[in-house]
Length: 257
Image (cartoon, rainbow, N blue to C red; front, side, top):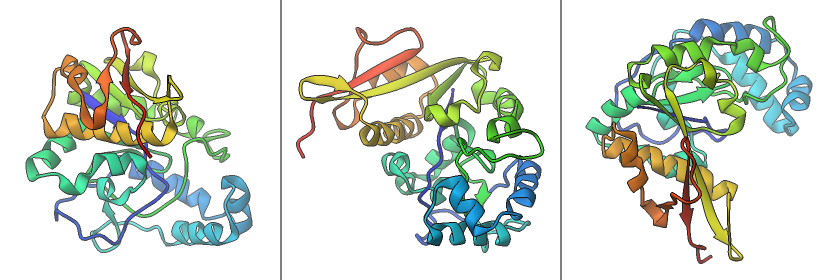
């Protein structure tokens, strides 16, 4: 089973790393091609393209300009410890033991607008480039055109993706994967929280739950997909009534604020 999640806009390049191990991203040549085109943009271009404030636009232009190979622990950081959004709060990778990191390296992947597909220990330099960004490039009118079949093919090459891909990514990111071309069965967990007597997807909770489910699989070294139905972290439970064959729904009672 291969777990796939989205990246995060918020980054952490400050916290002490729990491991000195690292690997190199496999799609760096593609990333370099994007960087070659991104470095031509002005702060005004970036602000308009990504709908950013002037300050953030300047920051990200600087990131593109200073992006340089080779990646080392001095100028880059393992991806699983660099991303810091809601999914990664739920994942809590800093609590992983060595055996968890080893399992994650085989069974956990992060999608990325710039790097395509990242393993937990793959070094990455800071960036902002969401997959849905309409950045015209040499391969097409947006990043979905740029990545084409590349990410899908890379997933198909993964030994862990032989039987099941567990889709814990957002629609924006999983759109860069072509499920019909995947050799594996794709299962998509959906997390619904109770609000005013009804169960619905609440973005903040759902993102965090995706990270918690990834951590649950990693820490318990789960390889049989049906074991995921036992997921009960933070009060969630599997709902057979609301689930379909490949969309598994997990519910949770209303949380006290």
